[in-house]
Image 1 (cartoon, protein in one colour):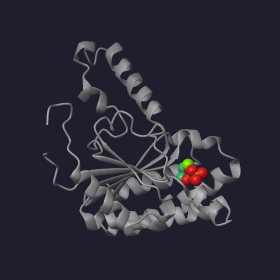
Image 2 (tube, rainbow, N blue to C red):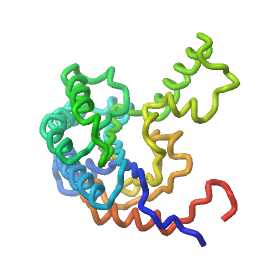
Image 3 (cartoon, rainbow, N blue to C red):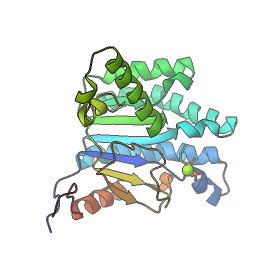
Length: 237
Ligand code: IPE
Ligand code: MG
């Protein structure tokens, strides 16, 4: 059996289980989210050490806006804090930050913090860190379809020339490679609207741990699992 041998270029993670981690300890959900932010830091450092070039993390879905407003505020507070306190360090480490998702729903100060962080780190490429926040895969696809339709209606693209590459170029992830591995923590085995188009050939790795307990060793295990699997892309092995 041929295996891939090499380290995955792009690892994407659904960070799940903060609330259950907290409940198991009799703590408020916000405590789980705070520990989740620590796991995020560890994972970013671990990815750099393992030679992973692209790391994409799903932290907040378009559906998560429907959570109780106190929890949404806690999560937005964490995001604000993260963008203020971590960006200089990420920049120093040569990381480029991107945020994918619907920014229209963020408070204006968060929109500005994201734009500043993206501008500051635009020239870096040691680690490409992408946060999917207020993100939904179907929304992303619909947005791309709208752009393509407008381009076709305006005569900028011939409908017959629309192919996978023309489509992918209009997704939020236009300048990212497809993920090689998608990891989900907390034992749930779903994609939950994450990178639907981009994950077509990703290896899926499900980890039973809750996100706040995730660390470099778990990332390394997922990389080993990826290397062990045979990827055929629909061809014969
Ligand atoms: C993951 O933890 C982080 C977010 C989606 C914000 P959850 O908040 O989904 O935690 P559970 O799934 O309720 O345990
Ligand atoms: Mg969850």
